[in-house]
Length: 101
Image 1: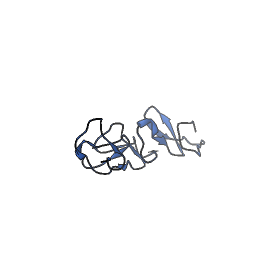
Image 2 (image 1 turned 90 degrees about the horizontal axis):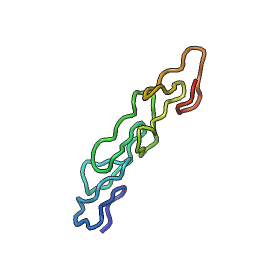
Image 3 (image 1 turned 120 degrees about the vertical axis):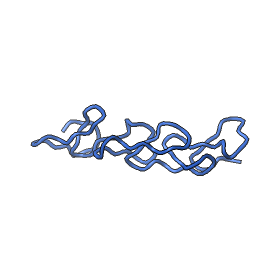
């Protein structure tokens, strides 16, 4: 039998429970269909477990993201290390991502 959606198993697997979520996807247990991590989260390992929130409320990511690098600052915010900081007075940024204000 084939593993449920967005999951996989290793060669030689013998049980539905051997089917684990792909990176960027989550489920409450092995052997069930996995759903993509919500926007604003990521999961960089396979298997069960919660998706990790992007750092701060000023960063977002696409559904099913697999890395913290996928977390981009919203317009009006710029990257400084892992943080997204508001653009200073007299500056603006109208796109998502790490670019300067």
